[in-house]
Image 1 (tube, rainbow, N blue to C red):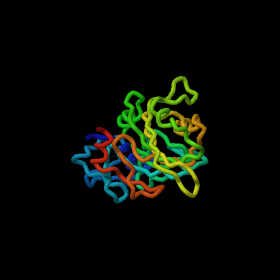
Image 2: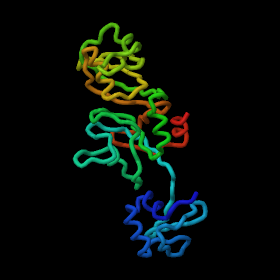
Image 3: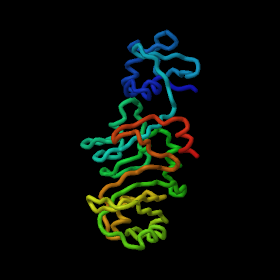
Image 4: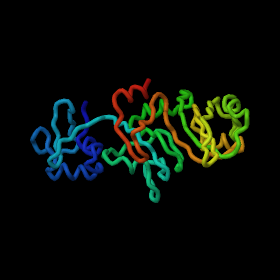
Length: 239
């Protein structure tokens, strides 16, 4: 694979495009043990060895992270006032990472972060109907026909009712009286699950995504923690 030297350095977290150009021209970058002062030089990642300020630079075209999103953090690439999910990814210098889809600020759970735009499109395209599973605690009395309503689609005020979804009632929380449920949807409408329960005169008190497609949230990740996806997990997402 061939890549421009300045892009390689920028994507590897050595600085912005303008900053790495200055680094190169200052003599801080070596290619095959020789100082390289041309930021536009084509680098063959199979044969060339690039060192920036004493550290060898490796390049992965795509990066994939599983984040257990905590409540209170917004799903965005950057924000002037709020902490974003990308602020939590401390081990990558990439500037082209993005969250795949979104979780509301108060929603926790599985969030994929990557720079693989093709995979993101496949997971989010409406026609693909990729399933997303959530667990929630609900206040208010669920109607007896709630599971049927979810299965048939619910009018949440949009042009069309929701696509068929699956509602599973897992039990009651004795201390709060809230109902513990699991919901599977194949859409990603704005505040969809909250609006679906709202249409049944119930309120979502807690919401957590536990899977997306074939990928399940790693139970070992505490809220705010993340990990690099394994090759097997990447294949699960793509299958």
